[in-house]
Length: 375
Ligand code: NAD
Image (cartoon, rainbow, N blue to C red; front, side):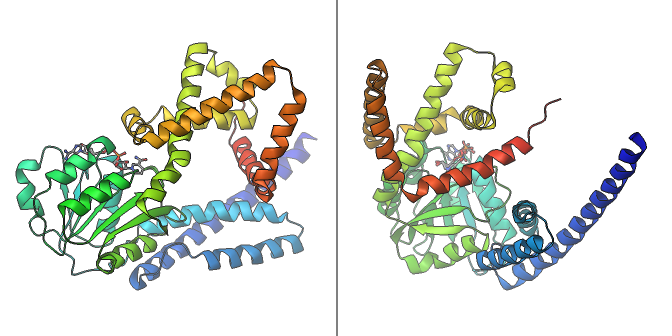
């Protein structure tokens, strides 16, 4: 039996080695695609091509008795790698005549990412760091674009500190809140203004499939090239007013980060043994713990700034607190009928999304389980 198993395992090893060789060939081809796209200024993410390719491979897999989800998983993971490697080819420069881009806060996490993307696209980039204000006039006098990416609580004062910029200079920011920064940029600069909010952190491998939200400030025709450049990097754009953006962020960022924060505080106070919790945990609990834990691996100041950025956030958090209390009352009354009624109401509110989210989360949980190693 041992010999039989060993022969089969040798054959599996052989197939796996062929898969490695095939992946190496695929990555080499992708690198060539990267060069062609970079020359012609094509976005690294092509949703239609991706969907058509996946549909064909799923069909071919089904015809050969391979589960279609298996090939889709493999290809999606491979494509992630491909998007990251396409970055290395650089990007077409859509505004070669642009004077230098000055990134205020360019040594920070997000600043470094954007400096790299601008440089990979052939722009001349200068950084104005916190210690560089004595050289600010020199750095900024011929700027073609200024991008402000400093901690939220400093953003407006840093914008006000900027010397007068050339009239045609684009003034932009990457701040996670938009109303205050956009308004301040409009006050200090008479030229083109745009507010950007990258909906991702600095740890992504490529911008493919990421979203950048933008809020028009002034003279949109002057920064159209920037929006197109961001799309070439692979991101999708989402245009919204600064006020609507900030309202959305109340739920998407402030409340979510706050509940993670409180959950972390609660865990730390309860002080369970984390290794024991993990050894008992289901994939969903491990994911939940990871989502909470990752917050505390980041900058507390950034999250304090996001959560406390507007009175709307506090009002929303207080309403959540109220609902938490209402739900506890249901428990105290052991009122299962009320619980079920509330449950059904929420299910109705989610509508078709409930089923979709169930399916989406199943795929995430399978991936989380795949990544587990129980030695
Ligand atoms: P960071 O703390 O890593 O970087 C901020 C940089 O600004 C630092 O290099 C700091 O030295 C510099 N700085 C501080 N004061 C300055 C001054 N007076 N003049 C010039 N430079 C100064 O922060 P970050 O995470 O890169 O965030 C920067 C901005 O990006 C914030 O507005 C944040 O809302 C936004 N943002 C961050 C993320 C994220 O996940 N990190 C995501 C989206 C948007």
